[in-house]
Image 1 (cartoon, rainbow, N blue to C red):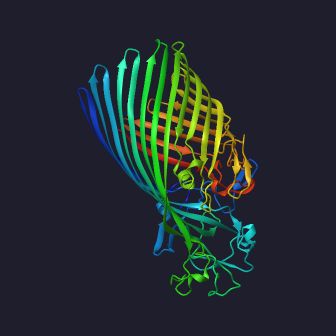
Image 2 (image 1 turned 120 degrees about the vertical axis):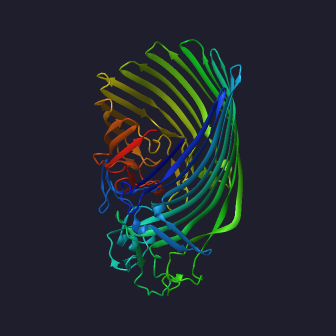
Image 3 (image 1 turned 180 degrees about the vertical axis):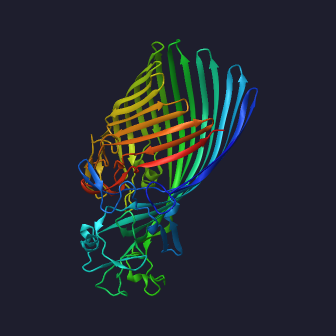
Length: 612
């Protein structure tokens, strides 16, 4: 069997270019024989998507409004007018990047499965897969919020300005002198990442009258290599941004430091990174499903992980182009601009590190069927997650600062089934220890903090079939109380913080979804949805509030044989609802002009699906 799919569209937010373009090919071949099967498969993905990041909004408590000149529903800084970057490097050569490439993974996956019945209720299953990923990542990351043109140029350096007494802005595209009301410093971030992974999962299964036992060995060997090249650019603060040049008119064009930009770039390649992480995972596991009685069943699983990680990071130094012989405009040397004053240069000093994980994880559960309509269950799980790549990089000089993230989760549940209703009520309690926060700020430094969390709450799920299945209603919601525990320490500037008992960032205490549907005929169906997100906090300090909001959607579909026609509308009331603030801006106060990432504006999508 094979499948080919392609996609191309301009995106909901207006970029001035194709925001999404690409496709994939999937093929598989399966041979079935008396005692099992053998299967091979291949997948190729070449896809490009624009990454939408925070935009300016005006917040007053729980009220959100558009920032002047910026459409909150359809605007973005990722726009064609600022899409090209081509700058000389302090180490030689030029670095070129195209924002239109966006997030561009090229993925090849080759895999195989083999299952065989060994007889006497024993069977063996082996799954193997090799994945190769070459990903280019290019995005516009705001560096703080918009500033008036006067403040950006004229405020003292201690207040975030450039301390210029006389200045002049001009458009890079035409050279025309302008007086922008607001300007925005934007990060032009480029990351190239090469990854590969080999996985093999060998498992044996034994079935008996009361259940089955599975035991196996999981092996994964992977490598990830990253190269970063980040610059900052200066643009008008609008959803059709234009690159700006800024000069000090108290100086002459040949004076040192006359220009604060190089064709709109304020900080040329201020951050370079070359790093690698390799992992070797070696896990033994076993699982038991056992029916104690016809109504009472038991499940237990255990996993022993012996995992090894290693990697390196390359040191950097600073340089400039003052003595490079290059010019900014064909005439003036780079002494006349400050854009190259703090360029990053990769060195030849490699810091190597190793990190091992030796842990046991387990889970156990009981399920009791009270009768044909009612059941209860309980489950406890203990697990872990190895540190992420950013945590390794930030702490490679002292890996004792990081530990695997460990989790404990207890949940109990009640489920009711009937012809007309399905209901589930699931109280839960969970803890996380050594959770890392590794957001990278606009200046290239990382948050690099660690915390414990607790969370308890109730999940609710429901499904109703009414009026002889004419009306269907699906519901799910969560009420929870996620808190930080033992979250104290020092910031990078030496000041102390205490976030103990604060609410975990970006997690609402209340969320729900309701999705009714009407089966007008057997082929024709109309449906709607409501998603509600409760108030959240953007930061650990709990100073910036992300207001609650609701998002409405609706659609209809018609099934004609194996062809499905559908029209779907999302955010049909054009709600301005923000999913996060700007994690690269620290803890802004909240009100006034903020940077945040809102949901997409109202959109309608028509589709035709053929099943074969």
